[in-house]
Image (tube, rainbow, N blue to C red; front, side, top):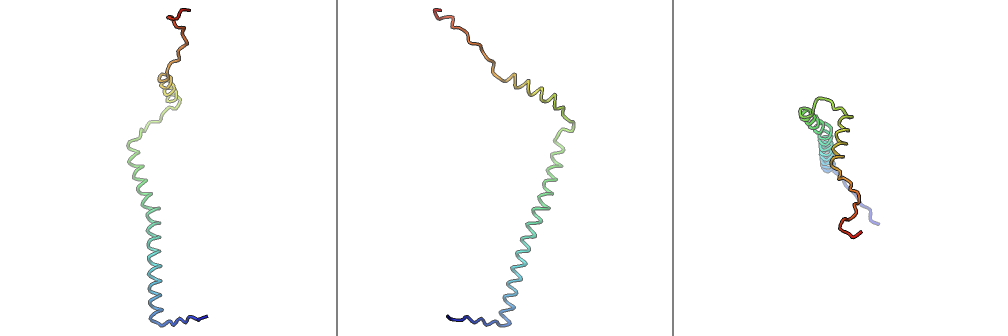
Length: 93
């Protein structure tokens, strides 16, 4: 078996340390950007939506019992009526 000999000079060590540090800085930058986007920007945009929608929502409270009664009456009105079976007057019976 051949044995691999790695000769590291000070220039190579400095180069690899620069590469390693730049990779760590890049990863931490993207991780912090993702964290800030998810936790700050999205919550700010959702709060702006809430403020905008609060202006459009009715301020008065709704009486649920009356609301349900009205919905039931509308549904009852919409349902087709049931017809009784009527004997055919044109048959000879």
